[in-house]
Length: 68
Image 1 (cartoon, rainbow, N blue to C red):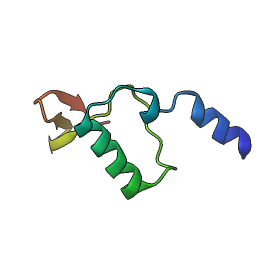
Image 2: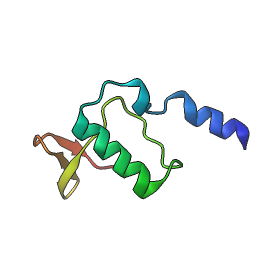
Image 3: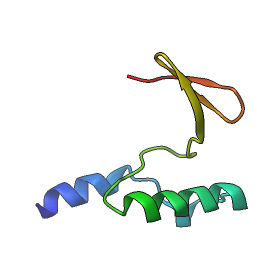
């Protein structure tokens, strides 16, 4: 099982390594408190999804993402 952990660490989002604004840092911390450390993030800039309709999710800027 230790190999699986190591693999998950390779592309994992590192909140400490980025220059996150205060709001984004707060959202990342909230997510870790709610879901725990085992819920791994795999992107450079966290998404803040505020709504969804059908197969589309939308961030706070109105940008759409396909929910697959």
